[in-house]
Length: 244
Image 1 (cartoon, rainbow, N blue to C red):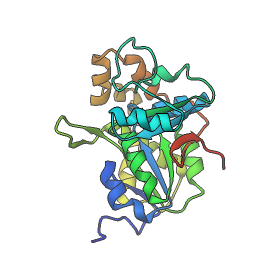
Image 2: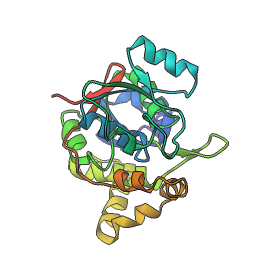
Image 3: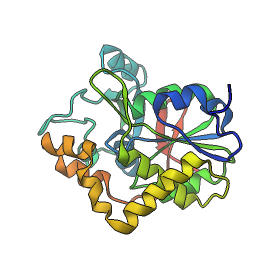
């Protein structure tokens, strides 16, 4: 069955890991969007010249994976005041040029890891590099945007508004005409928030979780728009600056 493929359109959008399983085999480019916080971590790290290795599990295998690549592994838990790197984008502000880091997460990182099998070009996008990501994707005809969402305690997908609106912001910057209805809906959501009150995203569910855990600074960083000029592309098994 191909009714869900959006194949009649160059620009397509679908949620989470199922998007990779069901739509990614027929596109040239995939943009993975996990605003709070994987994609923002990747953007901040690459702005500082580091490499980020996505991995799908937070267990001992992540450390083994990193050791084989000469990379350290980020702490599995985001804890206030913890030393080293975590899924807190603020923790990447001091990462050094050339550092290699494995960054496991069940959403953006796991989806990036699985997407490698598709053969498509893979980018990590967020608010802070939306225009740079759009510019990089203009070289590809068939583009799939994947807002990652979050997970409920039972492991089910919780669609997250910040990923959806960030996808819409990238769609706007791409300026494509052949957009699926799913893509156009995300575009409309972005345009509404941009025109009405973009600050409302600071009160979305994911942001409230981070505020409650003491990571309000992460929320502000994740919602910065167009402050990075670098697109983040997955080269084999690591994200680095996209060089056309």
